[in-house]
Amino acid sequence: MTTRLRKTLFVMAAVIILGGAIQPNILFAQTSGVGSDGYTRFMWTGNNFAISIWRLDPSLGGPVSRVYGPYDGWMPRALTVGSNNYTYVLWRNDNGSMSIWSVDPNLNYVTSHAYGPYAGWIPDSISVSQDGANTLRVIWRGTQGEASVWALDTNLKLLTVAAYGPFPSWDSAWQTTSITCADNSGWDY
Image (cartoon, rainbow, N blue to C red):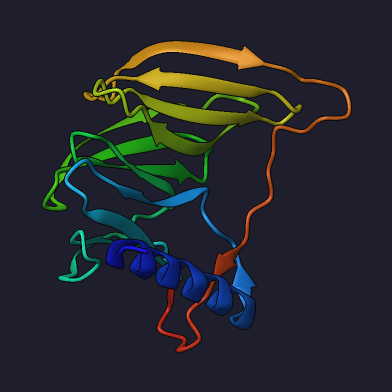
């Protein structure tokens, strides 16, 4: 077993153990990613909805971080990392609109774009293609059980939309959990 694999398994085991020992709360859809540079990025969420984005080197050391927010009415939902090593953060407003941020490889804010609100739809998660195009995918959950998938380019411009459902006996909403820091520092992971 390689050292890198051992470290990865150790971190995974620690998260699982801590997850069972620390009080649960709300987890955002996706809060970490690894760029093509091998650096891990992840997001801590404060109890005031500020975020701290961290970057770890390929050996999971040398942490660098940047804090953003809080922003009135906005709650961070998810984070993903593209093969271009940019981090993308999905924010949801109390009114149902969303904002997507582009953050450069050094964790500096670059730009953002807001969409919505759209009656009956809630922005829920974000992911990015790994084919080099770095096309973003945003999942919107419909209040009647539908799901809509949006594709956006790296400039955060909408490319296409597809909607699905509702389907009887199936729900587009998924349940998630979170880990809250035991030290009451106000940061969740």
